[in-house]
Amino acid sequence: MDIDPGFTAQMDGYRLATAEILYHLPDHPALLQSYVWQEYDLAPVYPELQKFLEFWSRDLEGPIHSVRVAGRRLIGAVELRSISAFGLN
Picture (cartoon, rainbow, N blue to C red):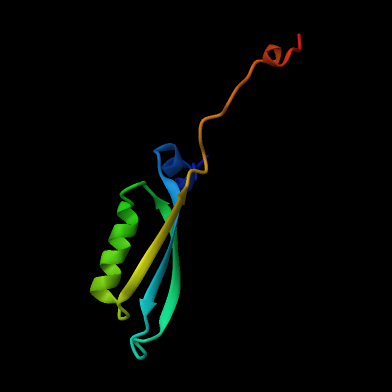
């Protein structure tokens, strides 16, 4: 059975990161366009996002105006409680 790479990444501490990238249109620099990037990444440094932004700056037209990042752990510790803690025996 193959294990999903996304699940493996989450077990290694990666979280689903979403970045909204606002950039200037190459032909109309006064206008901004939005691009949404999503990948498993390590907070708070976000190395995968950093690599993508370096690629963008180096190889794509349309200078970046701003980047907004949100990250969320999809897998975390489970909270266990004893039934007796609720007064049930």
